[in-house]
Amino acid sequence: MIPPTSTSDTRFFVYEVAGLNRYQQPDNTNYVIRPSDNVFMQVPYNRMNEKMRSITRMGGTIVSIRPLNEHLSEG
Image 1: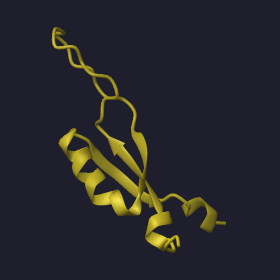
Image 2 (image 1 turned 120 degrees about the horizontal axis):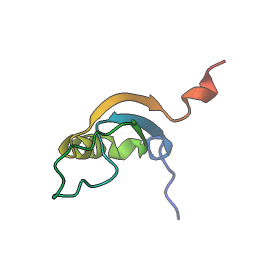
Image 3 (image 1 turned 90 degrees about the vertical axis):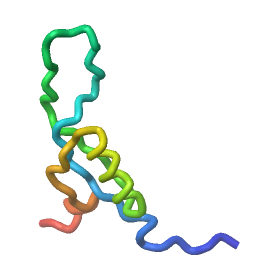
């Protein structure tokens, strides 16, 4: 028998993160590569804290968090 899924298993959130550079900067450069765009990450509810810690360790800043289906409830 398959256990029923809880609503927390199906909820996702979108993190908007600033300050993450998608490309590794080579060690032999004499200039800084500035991260230019914000990154959007889809995160399941049960992994939100883990992802927040990971983003912080990588030097990113979370700009906003919103439910993935937010646009469905508007309008």
